[in-house]
Image (tube, rainbow, N blue to C red; front, side, top):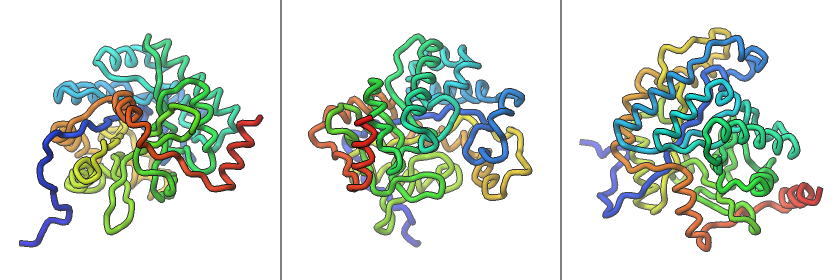
Length: 317
């Protein structure tokens, strides 16, 4: 019999608690459709996010796990009771920005207003403080390191906005794979989405479309590699629309976008159920606090001279 493609390491003495997160946006707000469904159309489209979030909450409750819901301010404005249900379930509410605009489309001043507006809405709905942020489409990268300075100035405790891989929609491949300090003068911690090492190369392994499309064995192998070989927590994410196989189709979207968005929807809930039972999971604020306790060990972000100069210029304004 051939050896498995993704061999399983031996058992560990004390399983590591991994970060479990949900990027709360509706099916029509995703990057795959941003060029075919305009923001001006959003209010005319029937939302499905509330029912999908309740399915996710029930799935987590059945496994007795808590998670972080990175939520758009636009969604929270229209579904305040959903936000209260998330908090009542013991989960963390964190910011995903206001309307899923990528960070590199903003100036720093526009970014500051976006995260301020989204946080205000979320806190009004939830009745709790919001201390975490995730950029839409992991869009903090080498073009926007000033975003960390703005998050720190607005007293965010952590961000989970970097994908340290090469990807056509996002990615900062030079960034550290695990928690790091973006700013030497701030306690802000960045928790990058998980990558694994396969054939000497970094590969995306933190959820989303990769989890839906690839065999479950890949995610199991990747998380165990990170936990057992690296001794670090994984950071996993998905979206509420990914547990909704009956969502509307967008026939005029590019074929590549449709394949990315719709593949594996019917299997997603079952795969998630397996995942949340097989590993230990917790809220992202808890993971960030634990990583911050190792602050002396965390890697600082090393910027190229060109990027460092741009950051200094932004901070001097």
